[in-house]
Image (cartoon, rainbow, N blue to C red):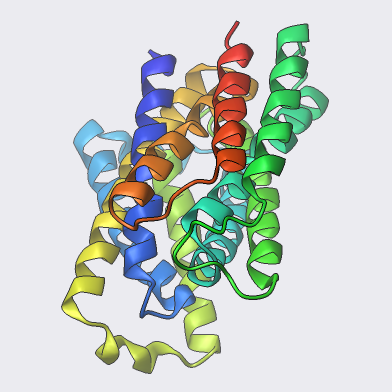
Length: 286
């Protein structure tokens, strides 16, 4: 079942990128992240109540809570960097770098979780790395190519924190129901995101958000909630070094929708890179 949850996570994560890109076009990226997190929090705690796992809150160990909080902090940092990168660059530029966190996550899983690498895994990682390199090249076909390289820094930081999120989350949810673990992590992200908004005194920008942005921010938050619930259920049952690469197949969904909705086209070089990314992920499953 972990395989189905992993693919479900990829589908909803792919939709998240497109919906969020539309939602942050005219909205401050930190404020947008804070607003989306409210939707994710409500959705995740609704799932907790549905499955009845709130009753085990008092029995959680200090170690479990610590790693869930650390994982939530890493998630918040990854989100803030990712949606800032999306605001500055095109979806087809930012997403491949964010998805390259697969390689770092696998290396960390081998190092800290004692997951044993196979020759297929090393080959898959090589293909993913090469595919990522090809996809981050300047794409002249895109209607809005990012000016400057600040988007690149934010995208790299997003990948780093995303990798840490997966490892910390894997440890944190080993002894807790996955929906409850997701809800606790989301609460940490919410506090972190709104702390930054108020720290930057950007809460007054709320009144300037138009209806279209509100709608897409809500939908992206809902897609994120669904992706998270599937992802951490898969992570609880499967190996991090396998679950994470499948989740990163969301790039296929993202690229397809960015072409159909945002009119961002891939160059021949980037298309080859995408094929290498997908091929590398499939090799990991051998």
